[in-house]
Image (cartoon, rainbow, N blue to C red):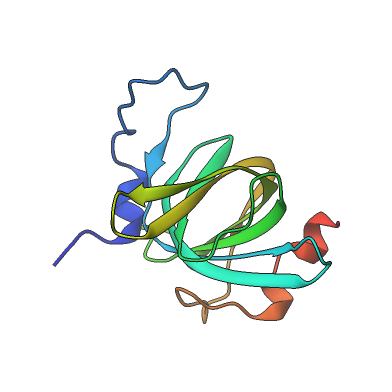
Length: 143
């Protein structure tokens, strides 16, 4: 039995040989994201977070928005000690890069530089991966 997702929030930041402006923290939880494609179509995707920082998120997903795209995402975090309800992080930002996560496995991910991030307390019925349209942060952030 592995650690609950919230345990990673309080773990040590990832060590990186690159210089970073902020520390990154590992967090492996479901993510729902959306963007508008080059033809004006609304795209929706699902994946999971790899790590988070003050400035952004790295998301692992099979279908990724292109570099430069404005993207919104919702991260559901359940099982946080002393929190009466699940937490939900809502992020609006720009895709900095899309990359292959592990060579030869065909798995991809993308890095987001966030323009805005909000941590909210969800309702008691919020489950991992729940994406009720009324909870999508698009209306909170605007376009």
